[in-house]
Length: 488
Ligand SMILES: [Zn+2]
Image (cartoon, rainbow, N blue to C red; front, side, top):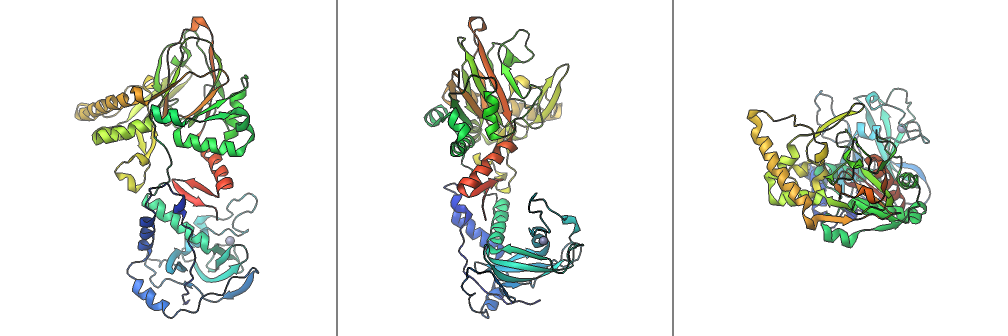
């Protein structure tokens, strides 16, 4: 199946234009091409000299007549794979470079109505059913909607698919698929988080009107983007109702139910099973770290604020982690590795989970930690259980290193200039990222009035799903695993 190569100048709208300023766009594109050039460049150049003329100008009509063997070749270098099957590939010329795709990838990602149900969008065959020997004969055709597309006719197709089955992928889609792969592999991360201290957050805090939050998608998008950036958001003019917090959370998505209930009350009561239900001082902490998937968002709606005291304060644990990394790599590493056990051990509920204090994104670029690599922080001293690892004589150093690091970290977290203090008024609701922003509360005098907060949680999947839906709809792009995916 020899095919000639034709080079088309396809304008690349590089996804990197959406990437946070400062990301080395040009470098990345160089990296992109360097991966796919390599030893065969000379050969390719030689072949390109014999190219056929440029492709005809695309017309608006669907052009059913294929241009035979255009732009495509089977890679001459079907490098053997482990099981000695030659890897079957199809090469497509994108931006004057040959990009080689594994036939399994091209077949697996077929979105024709026989492969993906158009309504449910579910895949109708299994990757595991793709024969190892699958091979494709490809050509480029002009599609009215998608522009230039590669159409593949299969040999040794998935059982059940007849000879009439065709897979088409637009050149645009193929290019972006490669770009995504390269960015994921290269550890490129889109990250617009702003790490904050008291001054930064005081200047940048966002207040959203309840009615706007409930009725306008653009306001919601703006608010959720802000929340993702700072981990903290405030709503005002919230109706005095025990279900208001449900309405607010439901705009993001399904609430996270826990053993505290779908919503829960923070008001003092005698012999409280949780320190939150006492009028005592409650230090900087995160909720539910003793569970395998602690809530991402926490919402607190103030229904009564009539006691002296009870101010809330917040601290950006990412900011403190970045500062700690500047101060001492050893401390930072200790918090990334030392396992801390959290528990909630009561008669009817027994939760137990062990995790390090700082979790990083597992991308290769970040084998040396940077602040962008921060994924989550776990810090909840009141719910700590006894350490369960590295406690024996041989491991003393690890525990001692952890202690020194935890001490330095705590100082940063609770430093006056890193704390944002606010006394939530009735009719206000705070939303914060429970995996990043620590919250705390001053003691209050429960004998002098009522203090009542109604709380709810939302999971990370739910939050990011809403953010992606709005982002895709309003901005024509979405983000997953730190990589920006334009809508094709
Ligand atoms: Zn198909």
